[in-house]
Image 1: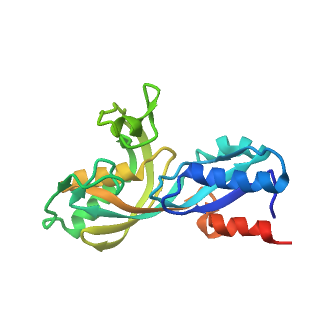
Image 2: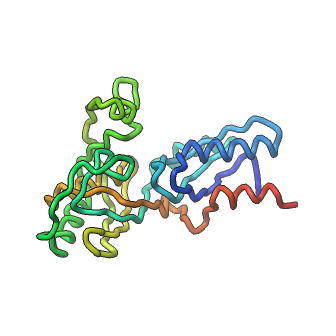
Image 3: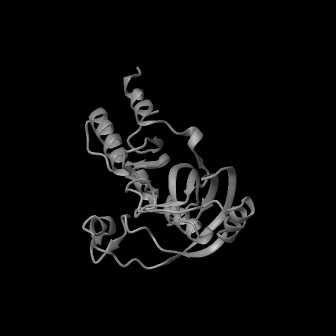
Length: 225
């Protein structure tokens, strides 16, 4: 049921930013209820990623601070033997390396290595602020923002398919973990490089993608009697 004070689970499409989803929800709610409504989200998803975005509206926006720290679960694909500056497909490949010596056991060992606490440096193509500016803004100007490593926690990291150079995975991580950086670091540890080929968020704490609606499905509610 549509309400101005609600928590909505949205399945974010590829190429949409998290802010695009917020604007979409806000526009429809304000047109429907004929008043200004505050809208925010709990946990950014990159434009190339899909999946669960928690959108809070009205007085429910006060709950964002409680929702943001929840663990996140993702599925995705890492491709080894190639790297990009953004650690995903936002930028072109800058290195192509031989991965023929990599074994199944090597991959399983690296996945185990990254389970638990580790210091992770965010991608330079990220929304992290450096001297008051977004890191990606500096990176796109060919500047090299100085990003400090942050301690993150990988609760679980399971390899679900290996068809080299592709590796599918499911991972549960703490707040602030960049899966792009995890893919990059995974490749560094293997010694052949890697980037994040695809990513989908399937859970945030107890909230699950199975209960989410795409933006178009969510908007269809406005046409019901």
